[in-house]
Each structure stands twice: as C-alpha cells, then as structure tokens.
Amino acid sequence: VDMAWSPAKAVEDFDVRISDAKEVLDNYSYGQELLPEKLAGGYTDTYTAEFGRAIVRYKTAVNELVRLGRRPGPITDFDTEFDWATKVQMGLVPRSIIPAPAGVPTPNRRPLWISVEGHLSDMWIGPAVEVGHRLEAEHKVQLQPTWYDNARIPFNNASGVDMICSFFRDPNRMWVGRPWWLSGFSQGDIVVTLFLLRHVFPPGSEFHAHLPFWLGAVEYGAPCRPLDVVAPWVADPPRPGTRGIASERMPFEVPDGRGGLVPVQNKVAYVCRRRDMYTETPDDGAGAKQTAIYDVVQGSWGPLLMELLRFGIEPTDQVIETAIAISRGALFLVNMDKHGGYVLEPGQDWARARTDAWLAAA
Image (tube, rainbow, N blue to C red):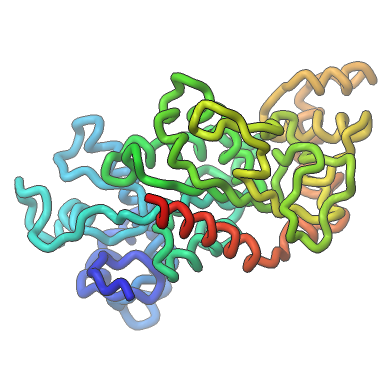
C-alpha cells in the first residue's frame, strides 16, 4: 500500500488550512458555491467538490499572473491539490525563497491520466474522470481532470486543448519520459482528438517527444470515432457503416512512437453505443448533412457545409441559431440515454493491463 504523504486533492481529504482557504476562495465569483457550507454553520477542514472546483480556478488564475510577472511566485499548477504553492499564494503559510519545505514529496511517478468531460459536464463527474479516479485509487495513475470552457455554443474546444497543453508545459507535471493517458467523453473526445492531431502526432509538433510514452486513450460517446471502430467489449455497439458525427475524426492508423503506424484500436478504445446519434452517424449523404450542422455547432465551417449550400441554405445567423437549437436537442433528441450509461469496468481493466505492462517493462 502506498503510504506516502500527499496534499489534500479529493473529496473527503482533510487539511487543517482548508477552512481558511475556503474563506479566501469565497471572495471570488468562482468561490460563491462554497457559501452554503459557510451559512450552514461555518467552513470545515474537509475537501469538498465545490472546494476542488474553486481551487482549480484559483490556481489557474494565479499561474497566469505569475507567468506575466504581475504576481510573485511560487507558480501554481492546474491540478486539484491543495499544495504548498497554493497555500503560499493564499497567505496561509509564509512566503519563502526556499522552493518547498523539507519532506514534500517529489512529483508523482505514476502515469498521468488526463480526463476531459463533455459539454456542460462537471469535470468531476463522467466516465472519463471516473475511470481515472478508480485507477488512481488502485495507485496505478495520477488523475488530472481538465477544466475548460465547456458551456459555450459554438463549442470552445480550443480552451480544452490549451489546458492540456498547459499540463505538458509544466515540467513538474509532465516531463518527457513520463507515461500518460487521455480519456474524453463527448465534447471531451473532440478536445482529446484535436490535441493529439495538432500537438502530438505531427513530427516537429510541440509535444511529439512525448509520443513514445503515450499509453493510450479511452474515449466515451466519441464524436471523432473512425468508421466502424469500437471497443470489443461494448455489448450494443454502433451499427456497421457508421462513424462519429464530427467531420475531423481520428485516422485509422496512428503513430506508435517508434517511427511506425498501428491501427487506431491498438491505442484508443472507443466505447460507443448503438443509437447514439453523436457516434453512430451513417457514412452517407444523410450523415454528411448531420455532420455539416454539427460543424456549425462546433464553430467549424468545414467543407461539408457545402452540402447545405447546395440545397439553398445560406450560412446566415439564422442557420447558426438553428444549429444551436439542434445541438440542444431538436435533431439529436432521439435516444440520448445511449449517449451515456456506460459499463466502466472493461475500460478500466483495459487501461490497468496496459499500465501494468508498461511499468513492468520500464
């Protein structure tokens, strides 16, 4: 059993300064959801979900201010830990030129599990973060949820990609040689896919050096699913001849980190279900029109929008409004229960086995 000390970072963790930190955080807009606890009898020293969400926002803001030279260090990272640097920035422990007090552990050497939940989702609730949470409880990975602007229409996928990039630019969080996982749900799958296609796969891209240490990805309700690719354990897989609804999807082959290519299913498990219209789009003309409208929702005026123009539909504000309405259920209302309700254990087992194999060979 791993008995090493680590900062409070998850619901029900304890730290004697958490109540003081809550007092600091409720001065900010993102800390307002802490106030019911205060009004109900006062802040406790127990880590809550509301505290976790607020502390990530606080640490992200402080990180930017330190980087811009508008606030003295130490610099904060972007995770959920109530760590030494955060306590210093909140004024809860003395500022010091010493990097960290004696006894603070070195960075976690487990693989980093980066989870990205979907549109309007809580970063702490969903299949991607839950599998990571379970594996972290088994001491297999270190969980890193991704906070991003997942409320905007059209989608602000770039904010999620930028946040993942920030993890990789933090040498205390991600160094070349550290194994890593990605896992996304729904819009989170789009973020994961764009990150890999833009920043990891291309030779010479910013994080290409990390590619040999990528263990894989587990993707749920994936709009970027390639044609007819699905995890073998899904009991009700999408029909043959279907793919994700997004116009930019993962290729059939992906780099293996050793100069070659492997089938995408060797690296990515697509957990998608039948009758989920985001992941079971027919690869025909009807599906092309669904994809064209979905591109509008994403803010991507892709070539498939020409299909709409062919039918006399101009890319006007009204089209955008219609696309927004469609994104909220007009077109995709049917069987949205299929865009969720996943059995998580098979994906958890698959990721655990790959992690164990990597660590055994390291």
